[in-house]
Amino acid sequence: MYTLRLILLLVCLHLPLTGVSQVTPKQQPAVLLKYGAKASPLLDQTEFNLDELDQDWIDTITILKGKHVRSLYGKKAKHGVVIVTFKAFDLLPGSIQTRLTEEVH
Image (cartoon, rainbow, N blue to C red; front, side, top):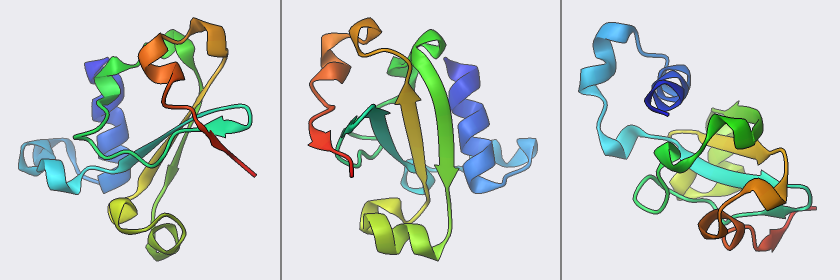
């Protein structure tokens, strides 16, 4: 799990490997969990930790950056958004299933 989180962080922030130690929690992207037509509210790193995810649950990971992302998702998205789309709902633990409450249009 640590490797997945590190890769996402590097891609989102465009930091060289030597710059990882300079990243603060305030610079981390927000997370959106998604399955089918359901999604979580936009979560920051205090509300959801990417270490909770098992790579076998993940279908795709989409990383959004730029000014347009903040206009679409609000203040929580100022450092980007990581959208994690899951393969199957029934594989997910209840703690993640309960977060998938919003209908995506």
